[in-house]
Each structure stands twice: as C-alpha cells, then as structure tokens.
Amino acid sequence: MTITNVLAGIAVEDLSLSLVWYEYLFGRTADARTMADVAEWKLPGGGWVHVMTDQDRAGASVTMLIVDDLAEELGRLEMHGIKPVSKATGHFFNTAKLRDPDGNLIVLSQPQPGTY
Image (cartoon, rainbow, N blue to C red; front, side):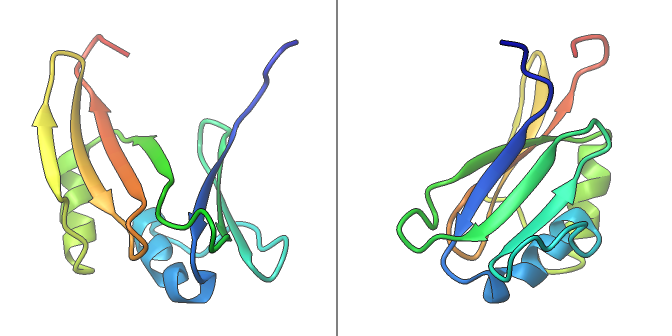
C-alpha cells in the first residue's frame, strides 16, 4: 500500500455553529462543501482538513497543523478572539494549542530551522 495523501477529520456538534471559527482558523471559507454538514479546507501541501457534524465524537478530535510563522498566525487569530490555551518551545517545534467551540484540540506547530 502506498499512502498518497491525508484527510484529517474533526468532529463538531453543529457545523453551522463552528463554521465561523474554522473560517477564522484557515483565514478563508471552506474550499469544498461536499455535504450540508461537511466543510473541507485544502492545505498547500496537498492534505485536507474535513470538519463535519458528528455529535457522538464532537470534541474528541486532535489535529496538528504545521505553520511557517507561529507568532504571525497567533496574532491573526487573536484579532478574531481566538487565543491559545497553552504554548511550548521545543528542540524541534514551537507549538500553540487551541480549542475550538466543541473542545477539539488544534495544535499549531512551527518547526525549528533545519529540523523539518
């Protein structure tokens, strides 16, 4: 088997209530709305993030997004009232953890130079 791409899924209780938060996170509207309760964003590296209504799993998702400039992203998100719940500096990555309205964990991670 050769894996050629990824579609990361995030379960929310009600997509219509979470959609604005994710539009702020990605800085744009969804690239695809394949169903009424699904919104998808295509990432520059080729992967997709799939946000969907799933009341049984809402709030239990974890997704890590690699960013070029963590400080810039956090500044942009703060303008929309989105603040990290924690930040960490490591040998390989600097990270900031966010929680969406359902409690899903979204980790923004910036690689240290020469590590990724």
